[in-house]
Picture 1: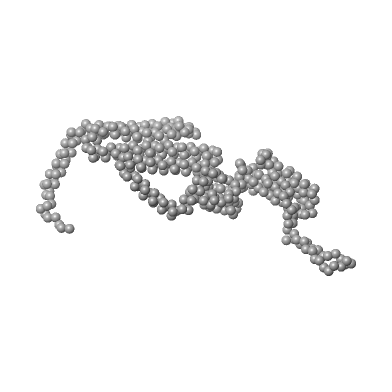
Picture 2: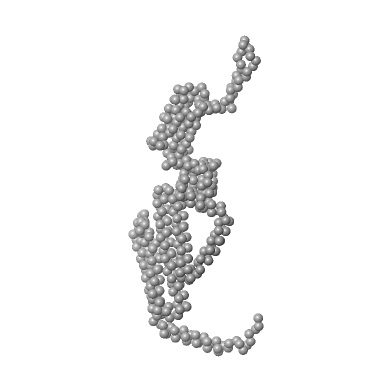
Length: 392
């Protein structure tokens, strides 16, 4: 690059003269438009002071009269007061600054108007986000009171979607309506990038849609006991990608939500009850009368166990099958609880009661046995064939 000659470099006097000229023009501008400048400055300061005063008074008033629990109206008032006050201050500042903005000319004046419109849109979006936050908190409180933890997740997802929609709409509005940006090309590029991202993270996307299916279909809730494949336990949480289940022995299992939506899931909870299937085997020398006695004993133990049974949750006890080495009785009982600890206590008490009552009634439980018959040569005068019985 060729060096600039000394003659082409402006002298110090020329630079100082140019600066004096620009300062004179600026001073001339301020002296000519001092009224518009004072109006804009005074309107902005007054509007900012009024907005700060409104916000401070609203906070003091809400703190002075606390209400527990807070109503939706109070929450909305507290959420909307700052954005509304700031938006009002911006409008007052804009109106008071319009005479000054007109003096800037078409280019700078239009840019200033666009900046004010951007502030209006951003403030309105902030107010909408605060409203969504209040509604989200109200839905979470409602879900917590009704012990519907999965609805808490639903409220969280709905709130996140609404917030994303508000931010995206604000961005598109500012870009296209205010700054005249070509949003169509931007959206097309975003679509291509989104498609590539979806293909790269298809498992994550599949699990996310699995979460939406769980929320919409409600196959289980937080705290329900479910069985999915080899995993059987209580649902601790349902996340955006996976669900956590605590098994009987305290192991924490993480199951992808896509698997929960595609596999067979057994829900062991039924409206505050835990279903339990108990199989008992009696020896083959048990008489029909003793079998009937065993069923009656079980009814006496299980009917209205720790509280009166509703008709749909009454115990079902029946002679189920002739087993390989036992006569089997099946009892289907519903414990009136939803926790592992309480179920373990009830099952312990129930088993001891069954063992005690059956022992007193002389009923014998069967265990795996095998009987062997040894057939020797046919001899009518000799002893009968030898037989032996052994347990396994």
